[in-house]
Figure 1 (cartoon, rainbow, N blue to C red):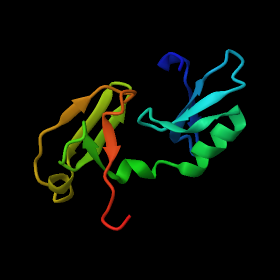
Figure 2: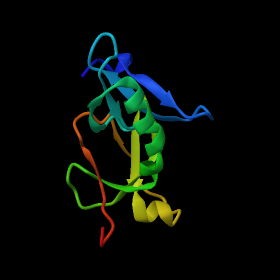
Figure 3: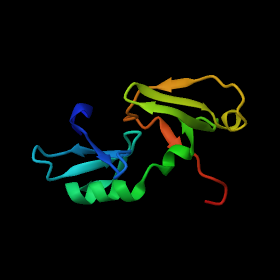
Figure 4: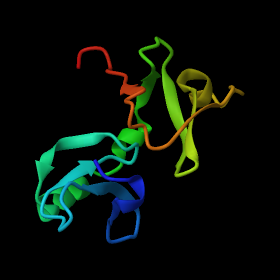
Length: 121
């Protein structure tokens, strides 16, 4: 894994960032695709293949619910930027009720966030 400053943003045609390419070799021959959260997506692969993977994948995961540090509380992503990830109680947020912000560093390289799986999935 390289320094986050070396990551290359992958953008859709509308300029929306969908993820990052983490160079594993100095010539970018092998890269690790990374989600907007900084999580590894798939295996190391060529630049073009990783870019296509991220473009096909999109940003839908941002609408999912998440658990922090293996906890039970379902959280939603309220904000995401290089300044950090802001999480809020998913149910209270959905009901537009006030909720306390939980802030963690971006990228989530320690894997503190795990996606909540809907029942039956």
